[in-house]
Image (tube, rainbow, N blue to C red; front, side, top):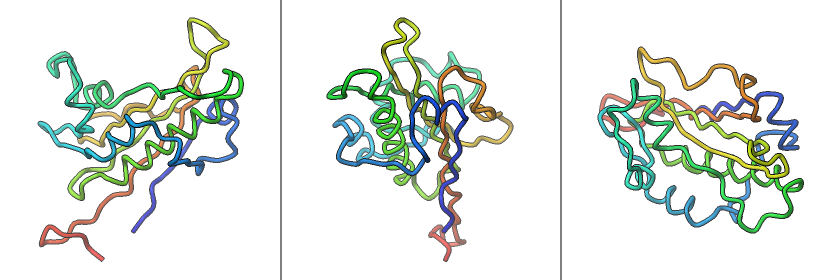
Length: 177
C-alpha cells in the first residue's frame, strides 16, 4: 500500500518551527477531533465530508460553484489552542495538532473514496500578530475541478498538505493486494 503524500510551503516550516511533517501527538487531540475521527466520513452528492462536521454545518451547498469549495467549507475548522503555552511558543503545537488530526482523519477514509487532501495552516492572527492560529480542511480530488490549491507558498499562512494514498479496489469491491 502506498503512503500518503506530504508537502509544505517554506513558510510552514518557518512559522511552525517543525523540522518535518512527521510530527504527531495523539494524546494532544481535543475531544472534538477525536469524535470527528470516530464518526468517519460520508459521501453526499459527490462530496466527501467528515460526518460530524457535515452534521454541524449550517450553510447551503447551493452557495458553492463546485464540490471542492463546499468540502473546504464543511470540512474546515480552526485548530483549538486550549491549554497551549503563550502564543510565541504554540506554533509548533498548533502545527502538530493539525497534522495529527489530518492523518487520523485520512486514515478513516472509506475504500471507495477518491484521494483526499488535508490542508493544515499556521499563522499569526490578522487581528493581533501576537496570537497564533491554525486551521485544517479536507478536499477530495474531483474530475473536472481544480484542486483547492496547487501553490502552498501562495498564502500568508504557512501551509502543509497531506494527500491520502489512492485505494485500489478489486472487482469484488474489496481491497487489492
